[in-house]
Amino acid sequence: MLHLAESTRPDWFDSVEEHLDLILIDHTHLEKRAASTALGMIFRYTGRRGLPRRLASIVREEMEHFTRMLDILDDRDIELRRLDPAPYAAALVDHIRPQEPERFLDKLLVAGLIEARSCERFSILAEGVDDDELATFYRELFKAEADHYTLYTGIARDHFPNSEVTRRLDELAIHEVEALKLGRDLPRLHSY
Image (tube, rainbow, N blue to C red; front, side, top):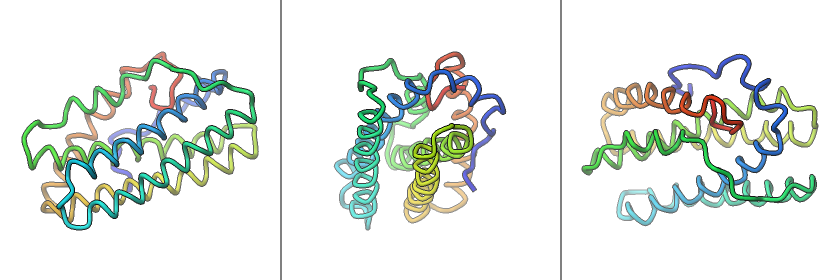
């Protein structure tokens, strides 16, 4: 369903469990970036049938998640501070082709793959954390991220032939795993 080339390694949660504060801070920043990504596409691709309204729903939802994450940090007396991001997203973005309309397709699919990986990670966190509030929130996020993945890939299929979308998604999914591995020893939501 999520078109990930590889599943998260079985011991990922064990490697980040001691750093849950950092995962929460990183997650907060990622919600903000996800809203920014969708908003950026609205600015760049206004005029594409149905795109602004569909992406506006992602912007609203990601900002709601950002606000909820701020509440979670406040409740746990964790300061939102700047973190060096995992190299994941930047490495994946490097595979976006520069020319239109391929750039548009790749931007949608990269955003979709990031949502897919987040979806998978939220499922793992929901099962692993020893905190009922967080576990419940992560289960909510699992569904939201799956919906975002479907929305991004659905927009791609509205504007490009299905065979082209599937072929490029296969290619980018391989790069997504490579990008994930670049953050091997970094406790982040998108680390290996």
